[in-house]
Structure formats: structure tokens, C-alpha cells
Amino acid sequence: MFRSLIQDGIDMSVLHNTSEAIRQIDLRPEYREWLSSRLARCLSIDDFSSSASALGEVRAGGAWLQGGFQVHPIAENRNPTCDFQISCNGLETYVEVATKQMSGLTADYLNSSSDCRERSICPGGAPDPNKDGETIGENAGHKFASIMPKAKQVPHGSVALLWVDVQDEDWWPADITHTKPVVSFNGDFYSGGIWHGFYGSKDQSL
Image 1 (cartoon, rainbow, N blue to C red):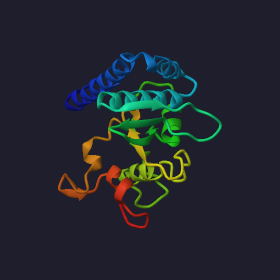
Image 2 (cartoon, one colour; image 1 turned 45 degrees about the horizontal axis):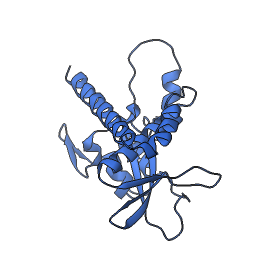
Image 3 (cartoon, helix red, strand yellow; image 1 turned 135 degrees about the horizontal axis):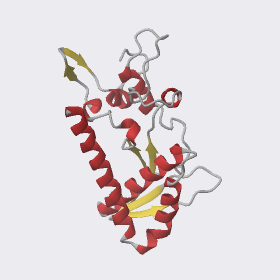
Image 4 (cartoon, rainbow, N blue to C red; image 1 turned 45 degrees about the vertical axis):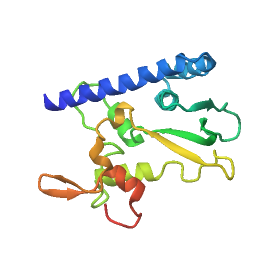
């Protein structure tokens, strides 16, 4: 019951964030065509990564607008591009949105059977039984550390921000504790997987 209440709370929070972002964008006629194109991508059932990334862009764009920034969506072309250019008080920067989803192995696992029995998932993927000592936190950390390491969307010499959206349902188990350097649970101490993704070192044990 407790877990159900938490899950319902996350569900409602994501729903609120998404609906508020759509409202913020729809209030401005100059963004409606862009919004329509993203909502059309949200209807894709053949490629859920496309619909998830579209929702991530909508939430990011709406949040920047609500924060008082001018937001300029960047049209896609053959060359890599960021999603937005934002400006405020004469300062400009680029924004790239990354929406995290479950690992390919986890997706295959969930799709392997059509029965309705309960299954568990881990943000970033479950530990590989063939790799001694691999942990859930390690996999989550690797997921974040590997976000666009060789990206070329940002024009040379420009300032850019990476907006990471973890509001896709696959990542709901990743709560605020995953961002902390030290967490205590059942008498043990550990560091959050998301924290490791930003501050950990490759050769250090997680």
C-alpha cells in the first residue's frame, strides 16, 4: 500500500508537469506548430523512444517558458542540432534534452512473455549475473555517465546545458536518494547511482 501511494504520487507529479508544460507552450501562439509536431510524435507506438523524447522536449520547453526564458526551438536538419536556444536578459545558451529510458535488455525481458505476473525492473538495467559485483547503482551511474559523450550538437564556442528528463515511467523508481553521495538503508551506506553518473570515476568501485 505504501509503495502504491508513492507510485501514485509520482504518476500525478509527472502528469502535472506535462500538462503544465503543454499549457505554458499553448498560451503562446508562436509555439503551437512546434507543440503540435511534438504531440504527434507522442502518438507513436512503434518506437516508444520517439514518443518519450518528444514528451521530454515538451516538459523542458514548458519549464523554461514558465521560468521566464525566451525559448527558440531549433529545426532539425541533416546535421546534429540542439533542441532549443534559450535567452534571458541578453544571455543566450543552447539546451539539449535527453530522456532516459530502460535498457534494451530490460525491454526484452518485459516483452518476453504476455502473461500478467508481476515483474521487477531496475533503473539503468538489472545487474548482469555473469559480472561479479555489478550493482543497480553502477548500471544507473553508467547510464548517466554515457549521455552523449561525443555529442556535436553545440556550435563551437557556445554555452550549452544538458537537460536530463527522468520522468519517463521506466525511471520512476529512481527517487531523490539516487542523487545523493551518501545514503543509509538497512544499516548499510551507499552512494546513489545518479550521483555516481555525474561525479564517480570509471575505475572506482560503486
